[in-house]
Image (tube, rainbow, N blue to C red; front, side, top):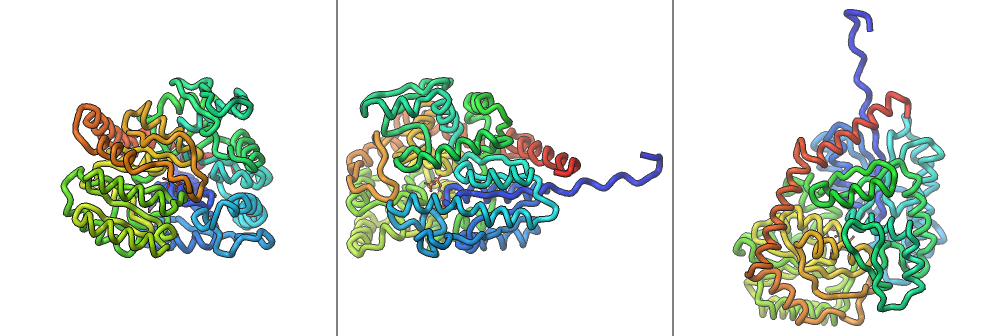
Length: 494
Ligand code: UDP
């Protein structure tokens, strides 16, 4: 550069296009990541379906008010001929188990509209970050020469078990073995055993083999991975995962900690129930650490028999509770009446939320001292990030291995005691009895050395989580490096 000539203009901010799987447990963390990217100087676009764009209007409006370069794009879905109803655009809108596979296979047809959308962008995006369950994005990225990272939603512990199982042929071994055999997952830095009922993979159900192959292939051909975890929580698994994958792994979480005000903690995924003020006011009246929060994520649905067992168990535990029952679960008149009667019997110490709860706001309230969770990774990490220990009740897919991490490795959980999954949308068998729930809740919320130790560890992880997301923290600095690496790519005309 000649002396006195003006410095070259700074490179334009990198543009990240994020493609979550259309399920709340996948959309929520990727929207958090998009907000973080936009807040840190990059441009971010979340590509989803129209129903989800509509649900995320609150987030879009907040971003616009804050002047963040964050936008949402809706691709047409479901495709004609899929047989799915028009509003079936999110896993929580799938009516029953028979719609589950058609829904996943229809998602693959988003590749065409996605390709057209990306081609319409000038300049082309710097990077596509797509969910590991959205492998149909891989062909679009490679045909246009755009770098692609995959976002792996569950714990790194699960991700490493999965890749080890595939690399060592464990899934085939399990398929050929008996139901009661336990199998050691090879290559894990700690001993982990699984059974036929709890194999280490998401798409391990009959009819999903093609989906698994495509997801694994898209992981292998990606340029790296983004995980919602942090180094102080999962260092040994992150190290193993990066080595097994042979490409960069970016640990950027807990992503939920980017939500710092009431507006954002209560509007994740979709706007929380109208009564959110009443929920927070009720929590304000409870003693610190006295309330157990009970919720099973966005997808699992329970039939009345199991709901009644939960209600009885909470009542019998004698503890204060805040229990989230989904709209569809509470739709039947007999359930509505039963829940009203439960609330009357436990007045002052029991609150039932019907619908979508402001989970993050609840978990960050000082009155909450425990969480009965289905072990969806977002719920687990949100709890840990707020120093709240858990009762673990896994339902399906990665949740059984998340339970092992929480109970055996991190020491912040009490198992309710389930050994096999329930079908995604119901649990006709009501596998968990009231006595199991009362016992686990009492152990979690009660006194004694073990309970105190769980609380101490949870609090310690909560503090480490906060530090990871602050300037100078591991996840904060990883995000800085991620953005920088694609800013440089911009210079190279990516
Ligand atoms: N969630 C919420 N309100 C609810 C239920 C769930 O805000 O009433 C959020 C929760 O905070 C988490 C996500 O939905 O971020 C659920 O993801 P998770 O991985 O825990 O479970 P999944 O829904 O994928 O089974």
